[in-house]
Image (cartoon, rainbow, N blue to C red; front, side):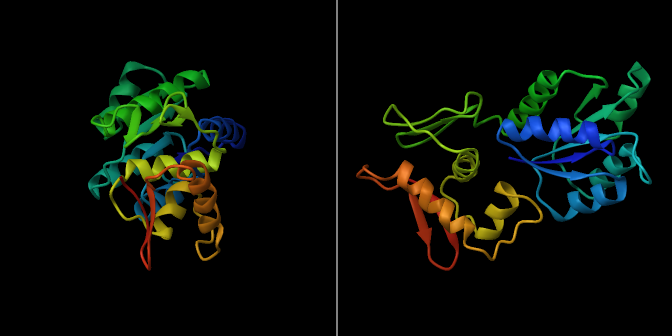
Length: 222
């Protein structure tokens, strides 16, 4: 899952980004409204965390602009203003949730997870492909009830493949969702990590789940 965090205060941005990355999310950061609107328009984000008070274009304006262009990803607004009128204003302009500062990171993470579940309600928190299972809450991965230890990046890569079960995902798509906007998709890093993942997911099993689609990318299917 790839998240755009829009926050101009370095300390807060660093705190939130670190926590989200520890929870296995890919995080890009924008520090002003203009850049946020541009990044959200050209990239495929699963969720936006959007501060209201920003340099240049404020968060409300960014939210209105994205919604007017048909961008429907969940938006969680952050603000030091916590009056009912402020919350109603943010929600009326297209936000899906509103969290007042200061907040406990545990609550922000719970709201992020709830918004993402709401976005894809049919999948729930347990992803399954054949005898492979991934729990998005506990981050436990197992195959035939045998637990598989993955690094943070391997887990994020597998989660993305499982969220797109049966679909061919290109290296560009993988780089955008599993790495970050500055990642060079022309390197062989993705192929290296796919090899690592295959060794842990498919090695020793009769049925291979991860398939290379020559000239197109990869596909996870039974």
